[in-house]
Amino acid sequence: MISTRSYSLMVHGGAGAFENLRAPECEAETIESIRRILEDGREILQRGGSALQAVEACASLLEDDPLFNAGRGSVLNEQGRAEMDAAIMDGRDLSAGSVAAIGEIANPVQLARRVMSESGHVMLIGEGAVRFAAQCGIPRVPDAYFLIPERIEQLKEAQKKLQTLSDKKNDGHEFGTIGCVARDIEGNLAAATSTGGIVNKLSGRVGDSPLIGAGLHADNETCAASATGHGEDFMRTVLCKMISDYVYLKGMDAHQATAAGIDFLTRRICGQGGVIVIDHAGNCASGFTTRKMIQGWIERGAGTIVRI
Ligand code: GLY
Image (cartoon, rainbow, N blue to C red):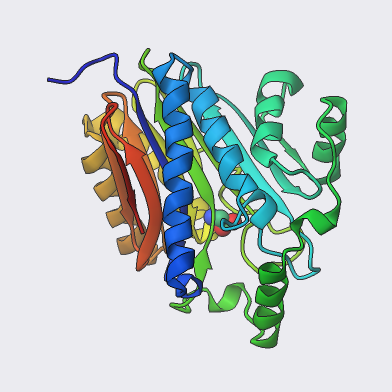
């Protein structure tokens, strides 16, 4: 029997082939990090915290961990800078906030939350978003914060191979993004997504992550969804809203709606990536078209499961 006062929580840490997770200790570290973050999220939801609080907290922790392509571990653009996108959405009233193409902010998801609650707008970009951060008392961090040796090496390699958006179908490519969806014990849903985008991307390129409906969506009447993958594919299909619409219009649960969304992504554009979804009843589902996706979940208060 489904308890209506149970909580559910899911996180993802990107989709792809994960050739760079070849070191077994790196894979073990990733699994351990996801597990820890889910347990922190569980604590929030167990003591009656909101889905919105849980997704912001979990996404921030993922942004702080250099293993993931978001916040501190963001991949570098063609100019060797971290240029990040993030968004958050509250399923109670469909309020949302997002930031795009920003540097110098350690936790873009927290800035997105402030955009949602304090700016009167939904999306701020670039220098304007960073100025708004200062007004909110969010400090800038130096570029050096993001310049971790693995990311510098990765950019050099990518530039050597002239790896650009045009060779996105390279099977070894990774589509790092982090995301989190939650249902709290009141039945409220929320979603958050954050990313550094694609390594060696053009300066000014914005992906799906900050776009409501493409990189995430949350609606108490349907589901919360967060995507990871080749952003352009999710922008063209508005996949998270599509999954929500499958729940709303066709009465599907999270599993059916996710499968239908992934089927569309594959059939129509051979899109690359994946999605995590929690529906209004707390069912947890995921789907992906890549070889792997880093993900973990707690379904209706049960044990923590992590998979790569
Ligand atoms: N999905 C992340 C990006 O393409 O930027």
